[in-house]
Length: 290
Image 1 (spheres, rainbow, N blue to C red):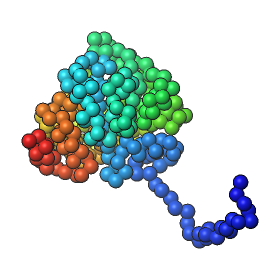
Image 2 (cartoon, rainbow, N blue to C red):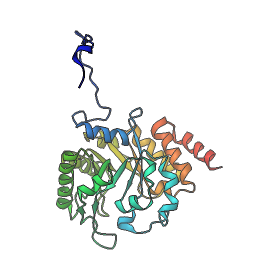
Image 3 (spheres, rainbow, N blue to C red):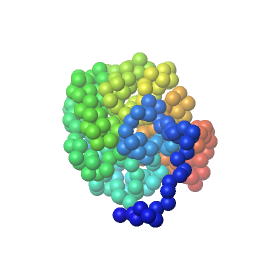
Image 4 (cartoon, rainbow, N blue to C red):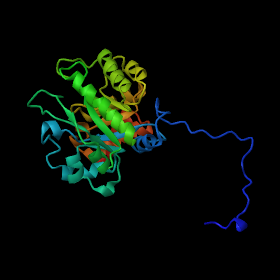
């Protein structure tokens, strides 16, 4: 215990100086708890306000996708260039070095595969998410699909658990074969995710009126890369999405199926964080490829 006789009297109380406020840098999240903001600050770069997420959770429904046959070989060289990785708990424990020190958006829903009715899913155990130190819980939500209600329940339950333990929820909008990827649908899906508790949302980019989708979503949106595109088109996709209000990208196949994946993820970073144009980023990609 400190000796009261030898303590120096406190005198610098800053009378007349207003209490300093620290507004959070991500939209719609000023009122989140400290733990939420801490985890989000690891996922998103505070300087740019954006994120480059690396998705390699495809195997949980698709099996050994091209580029992910040997994840232990293909993924570790890419992880260092990602702001956040999105993967399953199996892949995390099997092939991600704990020393990589990257935040994890954990695939938190699981269920049917491409062989069955997609999105008839359940959520995992929150204790296991905590055990692997997840920075976000990613849940599929199938708005307009056969399992819409069930997947919304999964989202709301995940958001409740996330709020309890300070872990953000990522609502991942699923687009079925019968649903159009247009602004009307994506705007609905993103808004439903946000209003039901998603801390941020992963969705697709649409060429027309995506700015409306982003503006109407009260929390940050990250863009899914989707199917493999030519490198210049993938960079253009990222650039357009950011210009129209997205807060980052979560790309998988457009990185690990690229001719040079390590060069590709660095080119994407140049667009997302350094405000490079698609042409400048493509030039960077080609220079790194040599």
